[in-house]
Image (cartoon, rainbow, N blue to C red; front, side, top):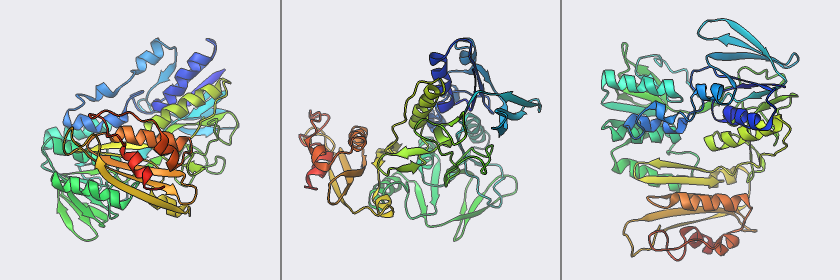
Length: 445
C-alpha cells in the first residue's frame, strides 16, 4: 500500500506517524512539504520576537531527518503539489529548488496543506517592512528586518489572535505598537462586553487602538513609512498584516471536491472527502462543531493533530471517528488571559437559538489570600432548557482552568444546573469555595 501525504506539519505528520504504527513494514509512506521545515509549533513563533522562545529552532518538534532515519518515512522538502488527478490516483507538482516536475501515484492520499495568511490587494503592500507571520521563514524575515532597520513604531493590521500576540511581544522589546481594526473591537470571536476588558488592558499598557477604520494603502519609497486608512494616515516603521487566513486548497478542483464557504475541504467524521481514497485533515479541512451541530472552520493546532491522527488510523483500516470541536481557545495578552469556548452571544443570535446570558466579576482565588486576582466569567445558555451554549473567561489567573471545565461541560451537553453540581477543586491559592463558573451558573437558576 502506498500512502501519500501533502503537508509536513501538525495533521500531516500526526497521520504519517499513525500509519507507521498501524501498517505493515512493506507499506510506503511519502510526505510532500513545499517548505523546508517539518513538524513545528507555529503558535510559539510570536514569542521568538521577544526572546521568550530563544530561537525558531526551538519550536521544531522533530526535524525531517528523524522522520526519515528513525521512522522510515520518505519525507521530502521543497515539493509543491499543484494538481491532484483523482482518476489516475496521482499527485503532480514542482520541486521548487530544481524546478523539475514530479508525479507520484498513491493508493491513499491525505491533504494536510494548512492555511496561509490573507494578503489583501492594498496599494503599496510590496514595500519593504510589510510582513506577515505564519511560518519559520516569515519569523526569520521579521527578525532580520528588526535587526537591520530598528523600527520604533510597529503597526499591526488586524486584532485577532496573532495580532494580539504580536502586539504583546513587540511591546516586550520596547516598540511603540498600534493596532488598526476594521470592526469596533479586538478579538471578534468574543462578545463586545468582554472585549472591553481587553481594550482597557491594551490602553493601560500603551498599545494604541484604532477601531472602525479600514486600511487602504501604504506609503514609502522602498520601505513603508505610513499606513493609510479610509479616514487617516499613520506614520510607521513596520507593518504586520494579520487579517485572517485561508485554507490552502487551490490544488483541488472545485468541480470535483466539496468545499465549504471559506474554501475548506468538507470531510466526514472519518476524515474522508467526497472522493474515494482521498482524506483531508487539519487547518485545510472542515471541523464538526458539537454545539452548533454543523460543520465549522476553526483552524487550531490541537484540532489539526487530532484530525491527523484519526485520518491516519482510518487510512490503515482502524476505524475511528472524529468527535468534533466545541470551539475552545485561549490567549495571553499582556497581563490578561483570554479564553472562550462554545458559542458567543453573537453566534447564538445568528443561529436563532433562544438564549440568555450571565456575567460575573469575582475573585479567581480566595479573596483574602491575594488581592487583585479578579476574573470575569460570561456564560451563554439556552433559555428554556438551561443547556450550556458557551462561555468566555478573562482574568489574570485561573482562566485556563475555568475555560477547560466549560469546554468539558459543553462536550457532554450539560445544563447550568449540572455545571453547578460539579465537584471542583478548592484551596485558597487556587479558588474560592464557590468557583467563578459556578457562581455564574447559580444566577441562571
